[in-house]
Image (cartoon, rainbow over all chains, first blue to last red):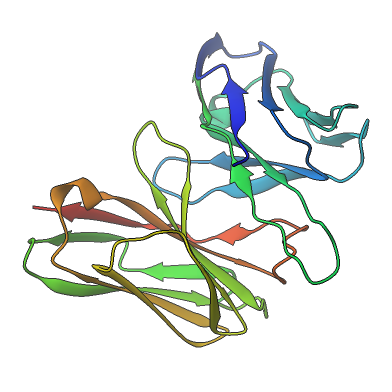
Length: 115
Length: 114
């Protein structure tokens, strides 16, 4: 089946630093999603990407859909303490028509921000 | 209330107990999902429902029994669980099975089996 490799597994950074994480896949996706999970909560969608090469921003977050359709990255600029949490990438491949896609999740990147 | 609501937030049960997890979505979505989240593992899809019909059972043991009476409600009935079933159980919904706009997750039920 499809697998996503997300790296790094964890990051410890100082407040104000920029963060970068990525996901790679052995197969192509036509949608990439990035989620954040706060402690004790469910994942919340941050950014959705629908086109190879697409670069999308949401405040201090920027994500890109890799040109090969097998990877995506997420950048967080000028990190703040509330950025702490687990970040998940998720990929979706839809064949279209009556078939449906199924989200495949990465293992997550645990982000710790020191004030 | 909006979004996806899960109850209870925390549950401790013995291996011989029977309990149920509840999920309710107020988003008008047609597809609902159960996921299991264990420490240091990716999210594991358990069940998928579309218009209250089960479309996927991801080889889940029969001690987990889902029920979807309508498109807004999803239950997970639990009986004779094992300690390794302790995890965060997440419910999610999406507009349709294509899921291209992503899934909306609930806050989860933290289950501990003793």
